[in-house]
Length: 177
Image (tube, rainbow, N blue to C red):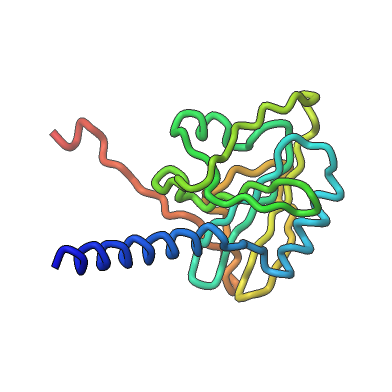
């Protein structure tokens, strides 16, 4: 009976170890269309300290993505305050690209030791942005301004009307008492 318990414990341990090893060996790649845009962006903006991709699924058939290159993270203060790190990092043409989706505050990647970037670099590189909109599977690069901040609703043209967030009228504090 004792040997059966040891055998069962051994098989369960072996199974768990195998499952953990499989998840460690996963490789993450970008969609081919997005990969071409990322590679071109990095090539057009060399020698930046930080390259990041922010992905925000806005509606079931629409996603907003922001490519960023600069001397430090676009969300440096937020990342430091919430002690958040990208869950996904990929290498594109030898350059590390951090990918954010908005879950980093709530989900941690304990398997990866994502090290703080301590590389000395020239400060005040011009920041570079690229806004990519995926509408129904079609990627569009748009230029709506010279800077962006991720995970905010951008006005999206839907059909012939412009969608804007609703205006909420709050009652005056005097009228509510």
